[in-house]
Length: 347
Image (cartoon, rainbow, N blue to C red):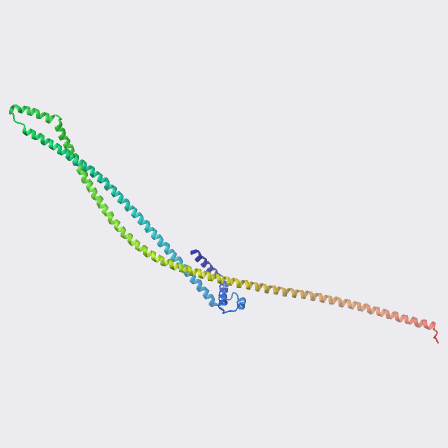
């Protein structure tokens, strides 16, 4: 994952910032491969060979390159996913727009069909009314032609009868007016029908244009699907490569953790040895200090003993001299007493 790659990069940056850790890692690798003894590692911690440091740096660079490639692949996958989502959204909007337009056209055609049906019924009714009015006029004309001519005497009667027909609003005149009104209404309806037919033709042309546009959009959608399939296949390849890279990164992370654990163990051993060394040095210093103090005390005691011995020797000498003087005095007294009082010698 990206977090593991970031952790690996952080570890690599820390390794770059701490050459001691890199040198310890190289020393651990040397110990693991048997190229260096543990004692030399304990003594030379922090002095890794240049070859091991170069290997560590190359490994770190490989990890960084791999992490960079993973980041680029992830960005490419995200961009392709965004493009795919955008294309799907545009296709859905286009499909909805086309469906809405088709529904509007169907509804408009249904309304126009209903209007045409009403117009057709109205035209049929007007035609029937016109035929009825025409038949009525034909019957009237037939009756007029069948009337006999009664001569000049009946002309006035016919004229008098014709005048009410012309002037009076009887049923025939109403039918004629009604027929004219119906013919005018029929003409207007025919004009509306022609307008509706023209509008219907325009709507059909628009529907054809929409069909052509829909076909073009369908072709574009097919091309986009092909591109999407290509992108998905390349995305699967990239995902496989990314999975392999993540697996390599996890293996490198595990090996790096193992190497770090070895380095930590060696550091602990080195720390314990350093602590033992410091403790022994401290004990040696304490012993030297104690010996110095005891030497000073011994020398002081020796001086005290020598001074006391000299004093006692002087006192003893003085006592001996006093005793010798006393002894010589007592001898002199004995000699004097012996001279004054001679002692009888026994027989």
